[in-house]
Length: 336
Image (cartoon, rainbow, N blue to C red; front, side):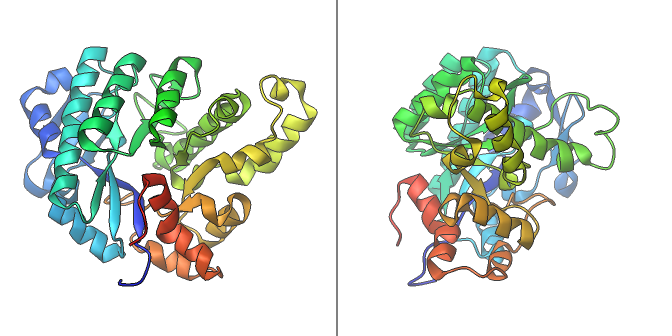
């Protein structure tokens, strides 16, 4: 792809070998175990949520092979949310985060031309999360961190997590927020895979709305946040949020800024699975706020992210921004 902007995927998952080994050896400590063997291996949490262990999760060369199939030049690799480990005690959560972050750094170092590391943090202990964030920036040069939309049921916008967001802003680290499922689901979400298909996009939108209405985005004007899965339901209900902010005093209690204005404080991955939805997202947020996200290697991944963009009428500048320039800006890297 000489002469073209690098195609950068900010939503690409891994499970480093180091954490797989740890869980094999100490399943009770992690409240998770490995079941099956070979190609049938799976991580299974005690709450029964889990994931297959794909080769692309732990093998840097396999990850790059998958990127080649999808037309991706650089992937910013992050752990799958099944191993956020927010449910562990604080010290165990920190230990797990360190193992995973060092494993991510090892994978990125194995293919420095193609992979970048994205940290995970023990958010159940904000002080420990800040310490680990500072460590991975200093030791591994990470420029991004993945955080769940909720931590033990509390939204990321809660005041107790604000110091972590503030430190990320100070360090110039962008945040990639990702919803996840923990514990049992109500019956209406436990069927038809709706926990993933419906609940997770809603949780992203709810978390982002709280960041808007709570004044957190006003307090942290330079914080960079990327929302997974096209921002969930947020872009498509921005009119309702803005109308409510205008007519309801409760919605204006902590910010005078309209959600329409605050929408552009976020970045969004392009993982909408629908060209019309992606077109709407670009029109609402701006091409300078959209990045590639594949969700590889899951079955919910977009295997041909470039084809969907190719189907849209965009200027060359808009297309190049979405394909890679926006992500490179977030990473603090110059185009090749």
